[in-house]
Length: 232
Image: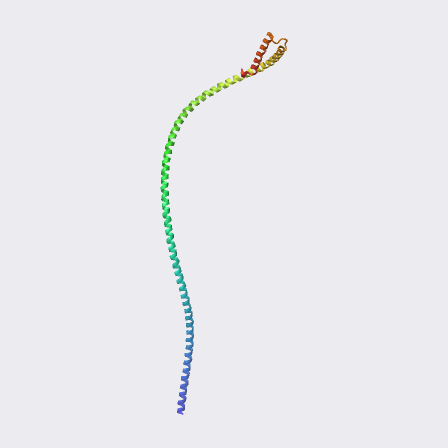
């Protein structure tokens, strides 16, 4: 009975240890599963990290290429800038030279203009002095002419009065001329009649006829003088 009890106790102890061992194995398996899960997670993270690292390397390479390209562009820009600066300096020097040339030319022109202006001013002053002298002469002449004009006005006034007198006299003479012309016409008719008698007479060469013709000719001259008094 003691052996049975001991065996039973030993079996219980073995079962207990087996149970403990199974429990430990289960715990270990659980831990292993957890570790595997954590390991897979770390592996996945590591893969992601490796991908990220690859992308970073590629980005770094692209960035290095971009940096190198940018550096090359910067070198080209600097070289172009140096060339442009050289051109600008050359243009500046040329502009300064042209400006100095224009300035010198302008100074010469201003000096020449000043000399010409001075000469012209001197000539103008001389002409002004001559004009003032001439003006004084004109003033004297003007005063003399004013006096002459005054005398002429008086003379014209006198002539006007005389013209009025002459007009009245001419009117009277015109009346007399009209009357004389009328008498002259009558005289012409009488002379014509007498000329007809003389020219148609029986002896045109007689002394009386000649005298009569002379009288008729004289009367004709008188008539002509009366008809054209301006020619007498």
